[in-house]
Image 1 (cartoon, rainbow over the protein chains, first blue to last red):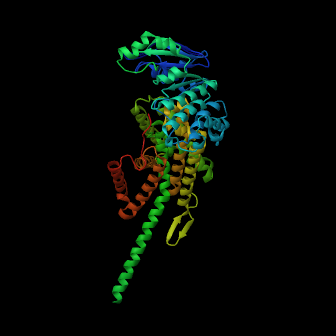
Image 2: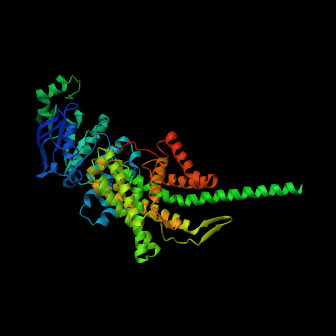
Image 3: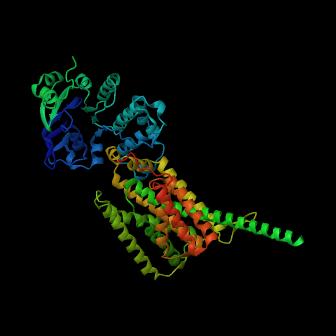
Length: 255
Length: 309
């Protein structure tokens, strides 16, 4: 469904992403891991259109995303969250969802109703997302006044408000405890159960290994392994990338 | 004895008249200051969504006001139509300015659009001077004969009308910004432009509509400035531009409440200095006020641009 074909992005002489090909199937939770600076975030930025690829392309069900403007990619079904949260801080929780929902839903609506029709923060879809993300009691609170965990939930809900087919999660567990991570895992599964395919970029290995169907591992911009969590954990290259060459004592296998 | 008490009485009367004059100036200044507030809001709105200054804004407002004047001269249109034509004309010119100076200039070079807008300022100014032969024209005003008397304070009817129109324009703006999808999209783009695009918001369209809305506000301000004096002259382009910039520096660039407070403050200060120091020194003191803000509080009263990329 979401396909990366020989995707490359070079910044000067640095090959941030180097000839990566991936195919993510419908209904999957797909993990993308790798040491810091291995090109994970660059790939998300290539998919969402912040960067223009040096070579290769990204397609979603045959639609060439790389040929589209950023806001158009939303309308074919790509949404994302950010590693450093980017909510509309001066808008209320419900308005954050309304903005995102409006950007999508009313794309073909009449000019006047698209831009001037008030009251969308009470639309059924917005209410449903407020309940889904357990933010119903905070609906009129300014987004900047939420707790960190609530902000993360709101950001995911806002991404879902555009009714995406693929949701890109950029380190959703950053700054979260292990227990938070388990709640997050449940929420990511719930997102998948809504019919949304998930591409998860994450450092918390317990989370990635626990919920993903398949994983791809990047190192220095290249894909070095792909497969089920067990296959990837057994892969020698992966162990070398995490434990050997980078000298980081990150626990890849939580056993 | 009798002489001394008479002198005292005279001094007391002088003091009383001075206070009345002072309050009168202050009230007039505050009422007229709403036009400055509107211009400040226009600068701030555009800066909010694009993080760019549009220096052609005051000139565009003036040109829009001339469109209203053209309707007045050509069709003898009634004042409400003239005001409406001024506002809409200015909105249209705002859109032209967006497409000429901002839409296609590279976003990573702030100087490009800034200088393009300076060029546009000069161009619009020249066109207006050429078409009007540099001569002031009478501009319709309403309620200029009426006054509202509150004791010894007289409030001019036309000034009260100017104030009312500007307040209505601000109220409509607030409704737009806080209640409609367009307003939410505008605020979303100004807070997190990247995230807004990824929520499916077409920032080009939001930018264009922001220029139109800011232009309409400028047109209202231009029309009301002209209505308050009953004359429209090309020289007010510089006045609108400079006053607008002073207002946003004092209020804090990017803050609408700041622009409102800044506008009222500049309007009031201007009139009070006019009373105390006369017309030749008035602007010196307004500039001094600007200098104080730039050195002591450069971010302005409500300035904050944190948390955006």
